[in-house]
Amino acid sequence: MWIRKYILLLWLILTAITVSAQTLAEARKLYADGNFADAKPAFEKLVKATPNNANYNLWYGVCALRTGDAAEAFPYLQTAVKRKVQDSQLFFAEACNNLYLYEEAVNTLDTYIADLKKRRKTSAEAEALLAKSRNGLRMIRGVEQVMIIDSVVVDKAAFASYYRISKDAGRLLTTREFFGREDDGNALFMTELEDRLYYSQVLPNDSTQSLMVAHKQNGQWAAPSVLPDNINETGSNSAYPFVMPDGITLYFASDGEQSFGGYDIFVTRHDTEDDTYFTPENIGMPFNSPYNDYMYVIDEFNNLGWFASDRFQPEGKVCIYVFIPNETKSVYSFENTNQEQLANLAKIHAIKDTWSNQTEVRDAQRRLAAVNEAPGTAVPQHEFEFVINDGRTYYQLADFSSAQAREAFNRYRQIEQTYQATADRLEQLRNQYATANAAAKNSMRSSIQQEELKEKQLYEQLSQAAKEVRRLENRK
Image (cartoon, rainbow, N blue to C red; front, side):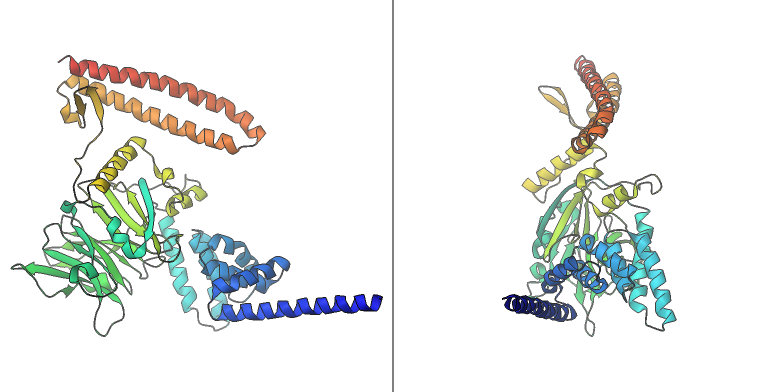
């Protein structure tokens, strides 16, 4: 009897080993062929069953990385690096880049490249990734403070239709729409005067996209010309153009050495004196990322901006972000901002984290709602919205006829900003309180109570200030 049980147990063990071997062999074949999504489940089972196996860590980490989950890949690739699995440093550095851990990526690649050179192995791929990592490290030190008011995930093939810019800003089309031909539907921009076209196309004897411009002459479109080399040689491909109404400022996307992941957004300006363009500059974070970022558009007449990105998106989808353009660039302090928080701001982890002025955000969202309802029209620009009485609402300081009321309104706005900042801080404390442990809650109660009292006092001051503004303006 015991012999039968022994034979049965041995058979089960051998079967399990055979199945495991078949699964591993199949998974490795899928991996070698680049079918990472299909190989991933098998490697996941293997690495969880044998977590100390260095190769399983590498293979599963690469599968997770290649299927868009750098955060999942990170600890497994880190283990592979620690176990000195050959070439694991390259994949680990790529995961670091995708997670905005640029300093760790640079350090890893420096060591890896030195080792490759010592072994007389080619380091071209690692050198290219190191250049992107250094670009990322430089840009994370200058993340622009920009308020992003909305985002929507759409099909990439139809993304241009979600840009609701006014006619005064120009027209955003596709080459398929404009030329009526079957091509890849590249983005095409027509200036507000409808006298110039900017678009990209593949030139004869070339395989990459180049930016073109065509001028209207005597009511007809002349033959297009290629924009200068310092634009089209920014990367292998240059595309997604937009020109500001000044006719000088050109935004476009390129995938060259100065980008740190796929397409990045660049800006250049036309020197009208000698008909050249200045050297393009990468506009930095949060607009650019380790993924593809493109089609940066500014509608000055509605004071709204758009750009598209496939960061953290599935295949075929892009996220369109709407933001408030800055008159002058201001960046977050690299030294005084928590590094995790800075990375979240750079990657646009949550658009509400960017809302430094609730009043401006609400005004911008109102403008966006208006252009969504009536696309192609400019919304009158309002500095604010303040009800004077049942028959009058003011939108700018020039509306006030009383100098005293105007001064009182400026005091009102100062109180409003302080009140809003206090309300935002109180909301943040309440959110932290909701997830804190018992000890932390005890220490936080006093701070919350103080902020609640301050908010109440400021609200009363705000109400009184509003009444004073109305009294002074209505008595004239």
